[in-house]
Amino acid sequence: MSEGFDADVIIAGAGVAGATLALGLAQGGLKPLLIDPVPFESQLAPTFDGRAWAIAYAAYRQWRALGLAEALDPHAQRIEQILVTDGRTPGAAAAAQTPFFLRFDSDEIADRSDGEPLGYLLENRHVRAAVADALAAAGVEVLAPARVASATFGARCAEVTLADGRVLRAPLVVGAEGRGSIIREQAGIGAIGWDYGQTGVVATVRLERPHEGVAHEYFLPGGPFAILPLTDNRASLVWTESAARGAALKSARPEMFQAHLERRFGDFLGDVQVEGPVFAYPLNLQLAERLAAPRVALLGDAAHGVHPIAGQGLNLGLKGSAALAETLVEAARLGEDIGSEVVLERYAAWRRFDTVMLSAGMDAFVHLFSNDNPLLRLGRGIGMAAVNRIAPARRFFMHEAGGAVGDLPKLLRGEAL
Image 1 (cartoon, rainbow, N blue to C red):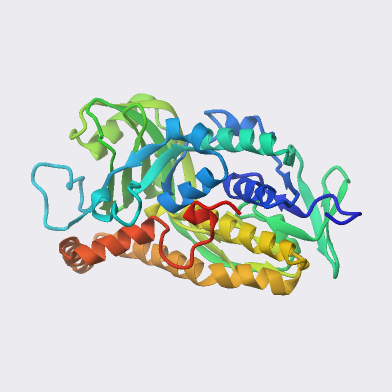
Image 2: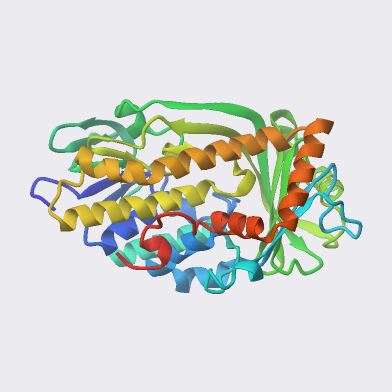
């Protein structure tokens, strides 16, 4: 780190993507500094965020390469099978299956994935706790609570001014603080997007019957309903409804929520009981017009906020973490200015196509499946049935969802920087 700088890279946002980037940079010999407005201890509480992440097996390799496996493995539920159904009620797991469903099985790609499952389900609080411990062990400085008030990007360095008046300097600033990114705004990078008029209602339930590592995704007229397996025979529900219905579910009395849940869930996994609070998140699409500019790079939801319809939001951010860490570490080893436009364009070029294509694909899925149009229902059903019968197509979708397609950064291959 050059004299006069507070860090090599200032990362605004200590969420999962930003913290994973910090760990990668530290492993590669750079000095990152994390800033977050939420006290770090609060982010580890079970009531802070009820979401669970479907982590692609390539993204999980990155955490292994960064030394997180010992902390994460006890909380990681393997996804051995994914069942996708299009209908008005849950159907793929029922006795009488319709012809319009998809079945993905990890055994089909075991030869190319080193025996990995289709992915892993991890509760956000366990991921954050493991990452926090790893940051402390790596000696990464975290300023929290601390809020970025403004930032300027000069020819030789970037300056970040905090709400308390402190000014921090570094060759590069990364905006990883979510959809309302101050860094993105201060860098003059615009964003495009739209609201879906939907709310994602999230809850954890305990199941009477074993889930056997099977994830269920039902495409229903109001939006997708996902049952995602967790450890200890629990499941995370991601229940998409209209904004009005989502707000009503979030505020419903426990017995009313349970009644609605049982009608939606069905009885194929036996009795289900809600554990813990119910959370609700508005759903929208937002894409930054650029991933980088001189002295600034964008990561995670600051760069791309997508619909959770296929569980790819965090995985996109983790792909970005791996690509940005490798780009910066290699540039530093070559003696390059890591905040220069030529270095940051390598990162942007690496991630641009995948980000745009996956975001567009998720948006198309939302519009195609979140409706009850008979013609669209027939067309998408025939498409699902066709893919289900073509093994190479199924395997391609599984590798794509696992994050193992394309030019992978070292960390996503499980290699240290």
